[in-house]
Image (cartoon, rainbow, N blue to C red):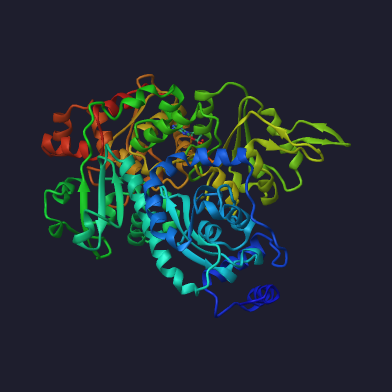
Amino acid sequence: MQTDVEHIREIEIVAQHGSESRDPIVVESWLRCLEKHGLDPTARSEAYIVPDAALRQHRQRSEDLIRIARSGIDDLYRLVAGQNYVLLLSDGCGVTVEYLGEESHKAELRRSGLYLGAEWSEARAGTCALGACIETGEPLIIHQSDHFDVTHGGLSCTAAPIYDTAGRLAAVLDISLLSSPVARTSQLLALNLVRQTARRIEMANIMAESRADWVLRLAGSPDFLDVDPQAALRLDAGGRVIGMTNGAARLMARVLGQDWRHGPTLIGRHVSEVFDLDIDTLEGLTRQHAARDRLIETRDGYRLFAHAIEPRRTPAPRAEPARTLSPELRQLAGDDPVMRRIAEQAAALAPRDVPLLIEGPSGCGKSTLARAIHATGRRGPFVTIACETIGEDEAAVLFGRGDARGHEAGLIASAEGGTLVLDNLEELPPRLQARLVSLIAERRFRPVGALRERTTTARVIVTSRGSAQTDSLRRDLFHRLSGYRLTLPPLAQRQDLVSLAGRVFGQALGCPVTFETAAASALTRHPWQGNLHELEAMAQSIATSYAPCPASGVHLGLAQLPPELWDVGPTPRADTPAMLRHVLNQHGWNISAVAEALGVDRTTIHRRMARHGLTRASKAVSRRPHA
Ligand SMILES: Nc1ncnc2c1ncn2[C@@H]1O[C@H](COP(=O)(O)OP(=O)(O)OP(=O)(O)O)[C@@H](O)[C@H]1O
């Protein structure tokens, strides 16, 4: 058994020379504690229990997850309780929102932090299973002297992450022992148990969310396929992925050559990019067929058994909620199913007093969405802070000032009663980001030089260009926001690209704009790396050639579009969603005319429309007048 002095000495040696004997996951966490969190191994800090009001907030945010996780964690606790384990469920900030432990040990457990409300983020508690699991996204064991802080040196903790169906870390499940006489390897069984329970909770979650959609469940063996699958995907009527378990995210990422940690970027990919199947072939994978026959292959050559579960038919049409969208959100959603779903989520969140994170690449419409949410749900001022314009020493611009040098209101105070948008927050200097944690979590902020904190009633919306899991957007800020997060797709993925381009060109030219098929096809194949910024710039670049524009409008061919669109690459498949929508619009949704134009029969058009989720309801949205 190591003494405290030996433990601190070991951390110092590992910091300089690395370690052969410690698990690399532990070594990396120690280094993060020293370098990223600035923790001191010689300082002992007792477990921290958040105040009751903060705990209530954390539990409220995790309510849905706790409900769904309930039976899984009860089962797990029953399995391990006899061996003195305590079970903790933490949210993405490391705050324990659910706890199962022996009542008779309550006082000791509370002292050690194995208790409701204990905060186990790495930044606060040093290396610990919950904190390291949040940082790495991996299941892991932190046993006794693996802990950074000697205060926790008796604990043995094993944790696994739970992801939501959008691929974001939602919670961490942990089982811990107050003191364990045995070696680290004894926890390997515990690790498997926690990992399996986390997987089952994710499975229950995706099933609860997917009643009206296809679910594709996967397993390596036909025997467990229908009872305990390893991964699951939720698919829309067009075969695009709209939800997944972490097992499925890892599988997709491997096939697509991406990092699974960027889970949200996998949403919207087509199932046929990952497996040798399409929405039309899912019926052959339902339980009507023997499990052994439901074999599919991934695009990188691995075989898996699959179980497709059909959507439950409900009498209410799915497009119904679109009618309840505010004009601003309806305009923003255009005629794209993914955007429509985002607009529906935004409409539900607009009246709620919660901080929001909107993310997506530059120019995909983050600020516009923030404004639409404000217009939908709030009165009062709408204040946008362009974070790239605020320097390290300009805290007073944001927070105001309240010292001998006088009083200054600051931008945060100017949003009182309205909406405060922190635009591209990752551009704000890290020291100022740190000061925003309490603004986002509790709406409190302290003006420069002031002794007291102030509160604000402004609703905070943060936008971010990157994947918010990057280091520049502080992890604790990100976790405080991650419960309410809207991820906008890049322009190239939008199904309504051609009609949207028509609107943007129409605005620039000052008259209605439509496109010939070759021009529309070029638009759908351009990568649009600058998203709407690039589309708007392109529209502006040709606008002068059409001034004055005839009131009857213009029908643009490929030659009238800028040369960067001429190199159109491979011939388009006429059934890509954006092209099909374009041809449908061109022919006033007359299926016979569309079938004739594309040289296929009407049944094929109906099948393709179903595959891409193009319905008469979405047609109504597409025919809105030009903005
Ligand atoms: N749905 C939409 N339809 C038409 N135009 C849009 C839509 N959404 C955004 N725009 C326009 O596209 C441009 C870029 O949008 P916006 O500034 O909201 O993007 P952003 O993601 O916040 O960009 P950045 O990351 O550069 O700050 C703006 O001129 C905006 O008016």
